[in-house]
Length: 243
Image 1 (tube, rainbow, N blue to C red):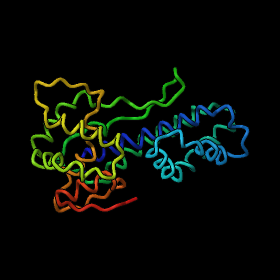
Image 2: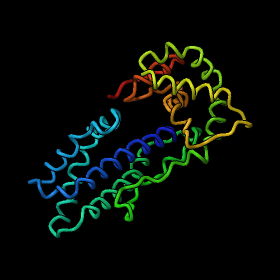
Image 3: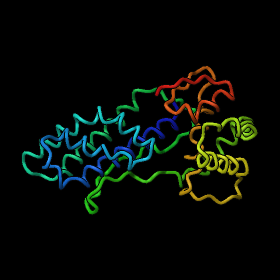
Image 4: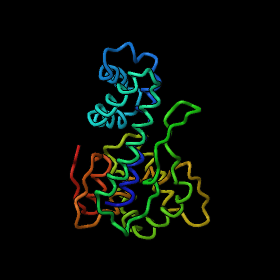
């Protein structure tokens, strides 16, 4: 397991939980119209088309694990006619603690790039009455990560660029354009180029970076075979679909 994999897991899962909990908060005024919290949850998540396809997929996978947690905590506070923000705060606390527990279950590849997104946490913004996710650390390390991958994997990156058409056959046009632009930026990058961390170049290249850092004798387990599969096979790394 690399730091980047853990950082990406933290970023995507906690961001999805943030959006889901905020959707519950937004519908708080109708919660008492439902016979049970379970029915309320089902009604809220039926609108997952408001989320992106990937987020909707994650919500479907997360709900079985979150449902009991949400039911228990909300019902406990509902008895005392207390606002939804209190059980939501408890769910946030549990998610942050579980994140740390989860990370301890894996052996981290120490020589991998130390993405700082693994330390981001969910918080509750009382002023705005919504769940927030701590800002990414990309503006502090965007330059370092590009230097790291260009220094250590320049041959593979050039190979990817030379074969980009065949490697992106299953990409949507907008995904391909974003990837090509970011890959070109990486290859042209040097100390004289100014960076804006808000553009998140590393996020656009994360699937490539995850493949590059996987040890040669390992098997990459992924739920994103469409993006990662061709690049792994291009450099003769084993990859298996988990979805």
